[in-house]
Image 1 (cartoon, helix red, strand yellow):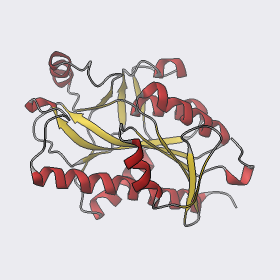
Image 2: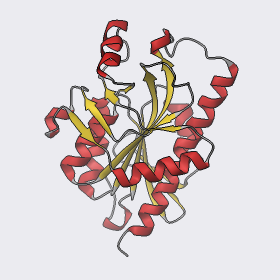
Image 3: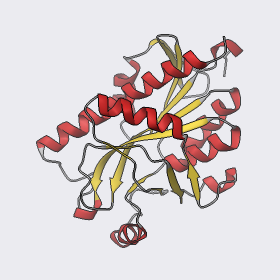
Image 4: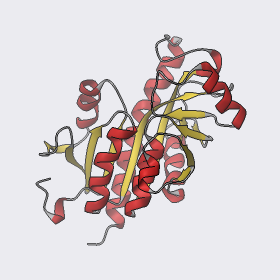
Length: 239
């Protein structure tokens, strides 16, 4: 990776998105001393005293690779950001879910020793919720599932999930948590609600202007909260 022991990031922020160029431009503008590591598409920078790694990794199979690398190097916290779909009515677009656990149906987690469900770090989840609410976001703790393919989540599958009590779905979070648990670091997910699947609205359908504005605000807030958590992790790190 071309890193010395003193350069290992305090936090890895993963973002599951198709829009890599746009995400990198926006997110990396908040960091100083940005550089791309020899491992492609992994970038590092600083935010105050915190050393931060950032990677756009779409889907569980891709997200576990940087997660494993940095967990083994000693990074203390992995934060998954991005968006999620909603299977139950009453959760609007533009909220942020901070699940405490996730059903691991991503197709990868079991190879890291995970069972049917994985846990996120309760301390950092609670802190993230506090920060999100302070930023004016609706922060939720939903019953969550991670699934391997966006286009394979049929209406029938989503209905079955809803009947199980599962409320939100993404493509990376449970796999990231499985890797973090396997290698002894903490993890959490900050996922903006977007697809309102219970209403038949996918990410391809335009949102009303007010919902689009809330989604944009939540998307900005998740990264800002991740950066604040990075500062707090750095403050706790041994000197």
